[in-house]
Length: 222
Image (cartoon, rainbow, N blue to C red; front, side, top):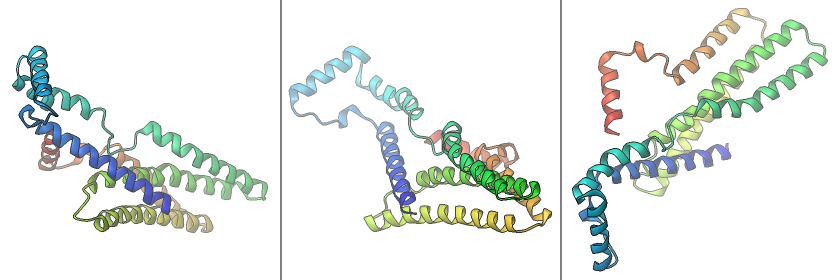
């Protein structure tokens, strides 16, 4: 649990710096900049006039083109699929190792397939959502708050939610592996397969038009 706490806090600090950078670029103004001496200020202003033509041209460039370019380089509130595949590969290797041990232990093919299917869904779907949840919630709770206690409380809240999500999924896997019911297994597989669809934003077309316009407006402002 403690590694999750430190990862979440680091992610929140990273997204906080992203927000400050975006805000500084949005409100950039040459006249508000402070120089160490009048000579430095005169030299910088002359260089700006030579390169951009005027202070207003540099201001417009920073607020529009430079800001748009840097936004593409900033960390996204979603875990890239390539990174997710790299992280989940070790868990899938552990699942294969466990399946081999169960097979050598004398388990039937039905028990073996049940175990592999249940934990494959857990690692590829539930864990993927957990990792994405850390990225997403770290971005949404990146504001520090009024004091350090509130800041760490947000970190603990995100870590607890992701830990409970993973713990619930793992407990469900254990219960299903010990059970012989087929209905529960089918519902578990169907539900697990829908989880990545939310990560990949596959339900975008099903949203109400007013909600989609609101999210688009919010994305344009940020």
